[in-house]
Length: 590
Image: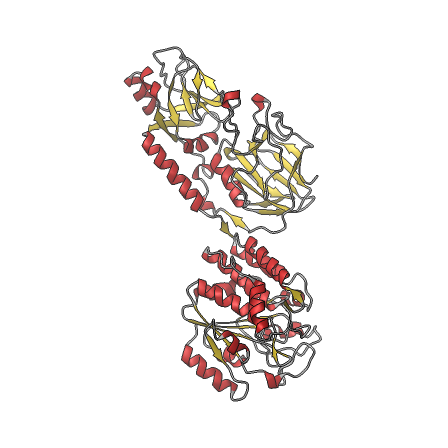
């Protein structure tokens, strides 16, 4: 079994999902997280369904050891968090590997934090929920309401890819960053308010109360002005979450998740459920007061809060995402691009994506590498991916290539044909003057070698089949981006020294931003993924790799490695690229 092993359980740690609803008729209470907002965000940051089980850690002091590759999040109370003694941030999705040790300190602000993992903890439900209610001996890891203990293994599955999501500190609940001096709780009066005189109700809403030491998941007893009801008790009836019942001593009790299902003390009203999250994070001696709201106001507040939560997406750390994409796209390393990538400053994909996102005007995308009298699949497919991404952002892309590729693409795309014969510099300058591009991109275009000729990866001179696109980049007054996967493409002049390690005829043409990948098409998908994260659009959602390859194949494309007319890219099946797109979407948060 893989999961998180409990080394130290902390003061009081329980498995909690949203709760056990619809079981009051058999005497079972709801349970669930006391701070529902922090619980839900733990799952949102882990890309989990909202009802996924987490660990509720009261006060702190928990130590866990991972036996699995996955991601985890800690939300809620302000605690010091570390992985292998290295401090890390709460409210952030963090990668852990087998053997890694997670340590939670003790709460500095707040009382309860929530530990979630991607995919959730695999805990068997009891009566429809795995929420732990110790008082009822139900739920939790063993199903009998027992809190987590040293030696327990909380099962969870492997997750290798996850967006680097987090909640910025300025968006985190203010009551969990700075301890509040006074917490105001909004209250809807109930039908039993008439058991309290007008003077007592006024005293309740104008007084201040302190949380007593007698508080737990069942309820919080308060100490403050007496508001004794006119009756000592009532017929027992169902009790809602947040009900404020008042026993004969006049000191209110706010009932929480593990409350009894029925009770016989008069209730002056109920605390708005949204405010119970704040209440649950208060310790003994904390001060609270009450403000009256109508039931209509309460409904509006709750609906607005729910809409805000649903619309509020986790923030993706773009720097971390860019690095993850850069590593993913050179992981196979068939032509040494992983080795070459160390010569490029981290963040190249993000810088390139930002250039695309911020471009105001035409964007020229040059592509097409001649093979066997035709063009290879690597390059045009990526150019189409970029074209669609730029269009989705409202941009104006133009594909630049020779025939026969230009003829094929002209039906569905804006194109510019470049001629093989003629003055390449003059051709490029005329195009640049005409279009005044905001950005020039090259993807898998052959680049000039130091002898002024073009060569393929086998060292064969292919100059008679290549138009001059190098001049588009060298003459451009706007930013330029180049993508390559072997060393003989436009842009590789940026890493000329490193390319001396490869047995190739390297290109010498440079660019502003060079992107490397095992297959150049993949770099285009990586840029689209970053553009998705930047814009909030799932740009790659409808990408069908095989359909695009089929269109190119019908136009006579060939695989650059095999030289055959197949639905492959550099010898790699289309399904591999489609899976890569799926993984890139996961990384970018979709």
